[in-house]
Amino acid sequence: MNIRLKILSGFLILVLMLLVAGVISIYEFSKISNKVDKILNENYVSINATKSMITALEREDSGILLLLLGSWDEGRKVLKKADSAFIINLSIASRNLIDEKEIALIKNISKQYTEYKKIWKHPIVGTKKEHNFEWYNKNLHHRFLMLSNSIQELTMTNQNIILNYAKHLKDKAQRAVMPGIIAIVSALLFSFIFSFFIHFYIANPISKITKRINDFILYKTPFEINIDTKDEIKSLADSIKELISGYSKNAIK
Image (cartoon, rainbow, N blue to C red; front, side):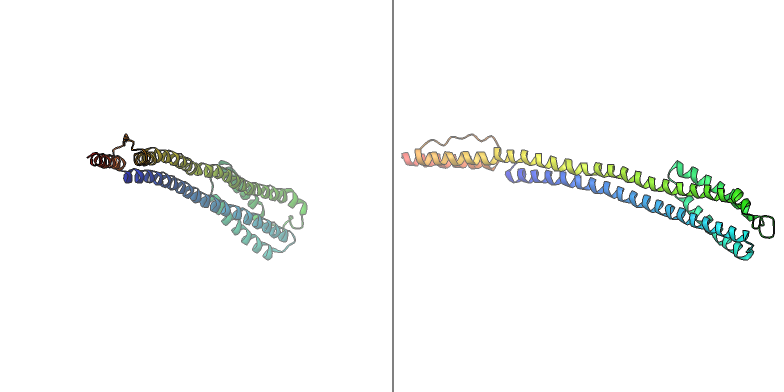
């Protein structure tokens, strides 16, 4: 193999190592980026939905209190609007479930809300329930608080999922960096080895040739050198040897 191909092959191997490491790292980071977008979007939607559910639940509570005060039209109007908002956001939160705890909480919230709604759907205005805040505290308020706590627990669960997944992605990001680090270390090691071979097979033989030429010029020492490689340097050494041999024969004549 000639010198040009030796040097070129060395640089090609180095470039190939860095290219493979770069492709692997880009692929891994691309996967992480896609997963981050998916998790953040799904949980962000779920967290917003749970917050809207709490707001709707509080408005329902206000509507119930209006009914207790005898305001039928206004109370039913508020309840209808709040109930619709709650059901819509419960449906949104139910679409993005990735954890067993989330599934259990959604089922529990749906069950609690159904029981809660059964109570206030029955007439209040014009019955003995009107102005009966003791009945409200006993039958509705504690259910309202339980339901609100369950929704807040769902919000916290979604937030914890994001935090846990962020830690998981941190570990994956570190693993994705590893091919790049390995490639850099390997490239440095290969560079040292490549430099050694360049010195051993190119620089050192050229230095020997130069020294033998100088010895011949200064001290008339015979040009004797052994080059193991079969490349341009050996051809150069052989040509110089023939040239000096021819010169010596001519000088003797």
